[in-house]
Length: 587
Image 1 (cartoon, helix red, strand yellow):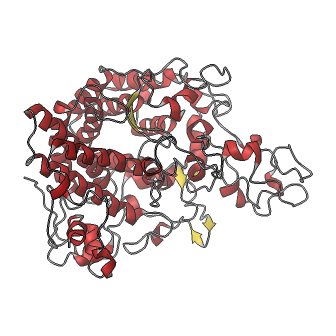
Image 2 (image 1 turned 180 degrees about the vertical axis):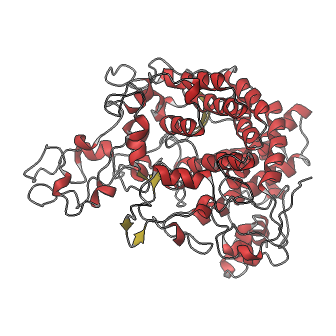
Image 3 (image 1 turned 135 degrees about the vertical axis):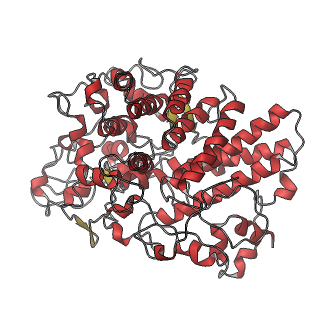
């Protein structure tokens, strides 16, 4: 019964299990799903805090459970397309096809459940001091706030679960996104007060709380508070990295942007830009490390596959050799848009070819002309790949495109492993984003000179040309986030957050009442990602997207099994006609 109660406490996993087999009754050895035995002292809660920290890696690493949440955020954005699920109409409450839009929902609520165990148990455990107790509570509140920030900016209105649930509960109700944001604002304010100013690699700090808090303040239209929170981070023990450092620092071909994105450099003590990172080391025990970052797999093109033909119509590539180790076995799960590859780098007469911006430097990117036939049996061995030899030009959609190698390259330390992006630390928050968050807050307040100054801090480090206050727009801020934070930010979530701000302020014809019919997210995707207008077709999927896809569907299993309450479905998806007004307050 212990296992059943825990699954029920996990909310959504619970609802699915109502029709599951007796295997759900089997005990789970070494599981933390036995709080009455484990979480009765500070040491036990500290072990749970480690679990919460590890769960964060599901955002950035492939942990062997089919998750890597950020790839969905980029695949559903202006910067990428999901080549194997181009038709978003096939994303339904019952089916997420090749990507884990529904599974991510369940996973996030499992993490909320884990956070609530810690938050509730803190009240029953005896600590040495009130400070120690509050510091532990702050960790639970931070992680719960993190997951709810992601939930409301991916799925909109969802149930807010405030405490550990130990028995069956089938009367959940949806809370409004606004109510949840107000609640996690209060929780993060507490966390920012009680977390330490500095800590070891991967540990929570005041800086991490204030960074996330600045995003929540923005979402709540509290722009002055967003500036104050971001300023607390900027004035803290952090600094943009402007000089060469760490691994490869002696390699004069590379530059500081390359250094910044070496996994070995992310958690170095002298990397003052890191606010929060996930820690993943190959040398750790097998059960303490992920399968890898998979960056080369998910974002890289499938250059090694059969469509890449030579002048004789034969296979020009092989999946082996130095090129395979360097570029990896790309799968184009996130097929990069031409906007990100080229257009976003055009500024003041410069193009992607001539820009001084180190984030698009030749040393950091692999462009189409740099892919060379590597099949020793090919007549064209060593020559640049020629797309004119492809049987179908559409093959270029997946097989050849420019990639930001400095962002994707993570060599496999296990030499027997397929090169897909090995183990390595990865940024969750870093200072460059804090500057862009403060710039955004200044923009909403109309303080464009200050906004431009913060954006130029980031641009100056990358040796990009400075911009002026008259050029500060929402689109420019989103462009700068694209240039700086590709693979790092939850792109879809941030676009949704900004879409809600514009709707709340009634800008450009956007309104909250009409959010699912007209929103900034959809309009920007359509402007920057021509995949949908060109009706690209892959695996029988004709590219299509609609305004209501701004929010992802709530799994139908969650809604139908919640027999004593109503969990709302997002507009545009089956089941939304049964919605009721969400709860607008959280005690």
